[in-house]
Length: 623
Image (cartoon, rainbow, N blue to C red; front, side, top):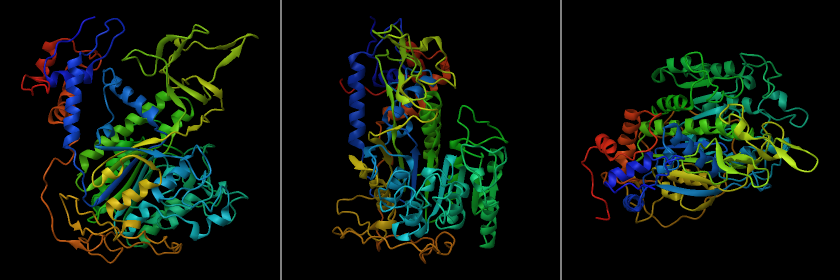
């Protein structure tokens, strides 16, 4: 076995980014590499400082179903798409300075669904399975209870609007689907997306699409981008039986437009990527984009171009262009919603591509925001029952075989498998259970389903009940620091921005340090706030941004503020040492660009690495 000789800190870190262990070469990093890598990571950790600023803006990225296993698989998949081994890489949020875990159970279930979890992390209260925007007093299908405003839970999006901030939602699912709906709707059943689904059980209740268009806070959301035309009565193609259509004959997209014009706003409704790109944010107050009759197609199936559907990255950037106009700041929810759908069908190829698409959206957003005044949070609502199994060699295709054979049937098996789902494929010879040979199939075919142990119908693999991770950067990101209850997320975001339950109550402690903006008075902790009063279901639309609380445009919706401001003292995002930061920002892409993704397999040649990096490097910590 050959070993690389120590070169320098930069060279060794670079090797960690691009090395791939190939089946025949068995090349591994030497001990010096791991020593230097750990010392650089330690130095980066020692440079991290807590940001106690008030968040002017909050962006929540939600990977639907992106549990820890799916996140790990996506990290490896992303690296392998770049021609690397994959294990040594990272998703963009994995470089955030703060990380924690969230417990995802609901009031009535060990394993949750997306409706109850969205209610938790957006509204700050845990609810029951399949219910949205209501507290535990409302059980599944209880229309009468869900109509009682006492049981309604307001969301971080509504709190932001009440503080004079602009708001937006972006999703690859229908905009009436569980996660986005929790920002604005109150319902006893997540499937009540349109009136035809209310049926006998929902008589007297308002469907989710109707609530988005006619009720607060939905009617005041400045930018809404996703799928779901059919639920609005505005489908452009044949009826899709996986969603619901309107039985009342209404076209809610036109009602949405008329409402905005009637209240003196300029608004546009768009249905293609090209139409979205042509909208000028400077002369448009409201934007509604519905790019599919149901969900936006999977990234691997999405039609790009002017007449196609926009990517999650492009929708995110469009939303930010609209929301950054607000002098009071904004709240934006961005959901990579179809990660969940790929996993429900035991098709990890689809899910991993959706995860990488969300990675691209987060990276693009970070280029647009300032982490001194913008809190960026990335998390998942729940996990799935996918597992990374076997003992595959490093660099093995994450969508391929483990390299091992079963000692029972002598057949290989894939690295990614499921404990239940439609991917089961068993037969019997009367004595033994037999399964198919996955090596005889193309596991990267878009239709390939990984093997599952317990059979289910298509798209009905279940969620998992384990904790999910949460990553954060920006003001008060350090509040995410251990295992939390999932509903804690809404309260931490609210405290960061001084909105909702923390409006006027977000005093920072005496040891807090600030780098920008007015500093809330330090004060002893206040007693817990009283329960929120029932919302007024008939409330009038909010006035334009900045005047919701009678504030001038430069007023911050917080407690009386000291006039002291402190200068910027340290890097705004010191999660990496300068050496690692430079590599991640410049050299990794430089190497891949220079040699091509098809040829970047391993860097055992010292001359190649030095030629690309140069020799101006820091000395290793061990010297």
